[in-house]
Image (tube, rainbow, N blue to C red; front, side, top):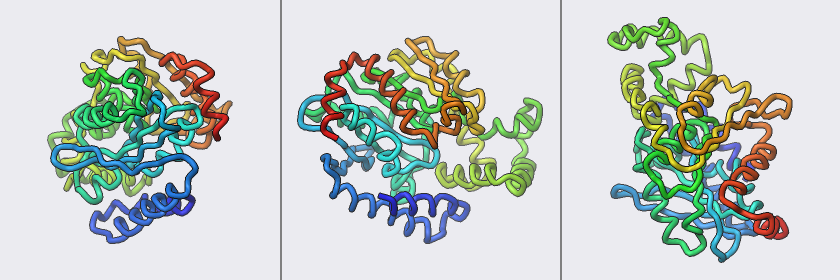
Length: 330
């Protein structure tokens, strides 16, 4: 498992050259070492394939036992792989008595690297077949399926929940109202969209930012890789639909919006999402006082999972006996 995480981080910055052979080689080692590890785990873990538009979405189904239980459905975001989601939340879900299905959608993990399917903004088209799959499993309580999206998943999960109403609860970590790459240019152009109509100027302008700022460089390179954009102008165009404007109000299930106090990627976005929601909603701030201020609470995942699962237990009506039963097993 340690090797899997090391290989994942080693591949993280290679996406500036989509033809770099190290991408598939190093990411492949991250997946293969993880799959060796799950064979040695004490709890049952299945590699699964969910039917999706003529192909499949890969995932891992973690189950506590053979009884019917609440199930947490988890996907990542802009740079996620299915394997890393075990460390982030699946292990905690098992300890709390939840089954957990983690999966990769278009733009993520093997789906972008092997199937070459880029991100799509209408994420409900991705989540609905996964919910269909879960409802055919006897271990899954059909009335208690929760959806968690992490990082860019803080947009993707609420987008899916707005149209997929079999979801009993939604968690956006961290909340994201929109992820339009054009917003970066608007900030430097005092809100003006004029530069959006000038591809050559946009390319030059953003390239200069990339030379000065490693965060911008990584975001643009990974964006072009995961959206299959051949230019910065095309990336901006492909991300313009990534907004919950006019969509957030369609969410019906209880929704938890998380915010990390020092999140330099999503500053102001969680509050914007929370304000747009009309469903039962909770805002959860993570701060430096608890060492949980970084993007998606990295550095304080135990604390994050404790708070989130307390909210989820209450929201889904899970009693202490159900949670403690699982804790005794681990």
